[in-house]
Length: 300
Image 1 (spheres, rainbow, N blue to C red):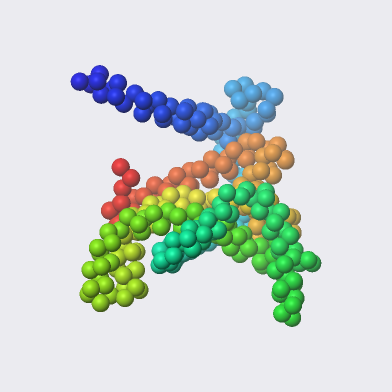
Image 2 (cartoon, rainbow, N blue to C red):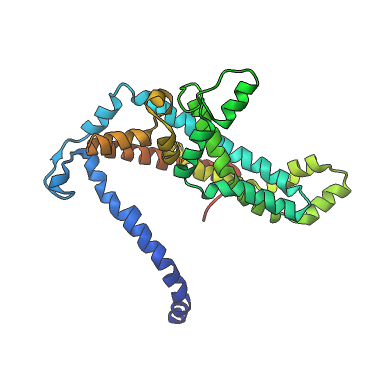
């Protein structure tokens, strides 16, 4: 009987084999490089060559850097703002779109807000640089026409973080909206009919039926997003920042890029990456624990 079940399940196991191999090659095997965080790594000697062991000196070196605290603050503040807006905005839009009765209009709106998700930050970065330019950008032209001074969104430390948060939210909220719309379609329509018969208006139906029906999906995305607290968006910031905004826009990933690839301090860069991974793993584990304890949510 067991052999029969194995034969039936064999095609399913073969289907996940490519994904398993990819995960093994790109996620697990590279973990051997963690040892670089504890070495004074010299590439010419190779990963398994005789490297000088320095213990925790790389970590101490990073923590003692005068700008590391500001880098941590930039990373956490930008990523937390992105996480909050990345949860709230798609929920609101999903509820609003669900109220649209014209199917053609609904599909058009979904396509329009989902489209930016497929564009890379290399493309969007060039577009945003033109749009937000203080000299000839569309947005600043509008601001000047209203009698205000132009704003250097990508070159002013006051405006750069909020610009990163808003543009990231604009790019990705369509993806989250699709997920929440799928959750809304799974709600039993008879609940709305019963609520309507009891005199509940659309707001009360949303508050007492729609949002509770989306709870599990909201908790899932919240748990997953908390693991990205130290991921403030390397692709976006790398394509849009410049030395004048390092004070407010430099994050852990851009710092690792400069210190690791440009300055060739591989041990220090790996130490920062390991620190970031440990913190992210801890946060997502703690958030999953609280999701299970207070919302009775579990993955398995």
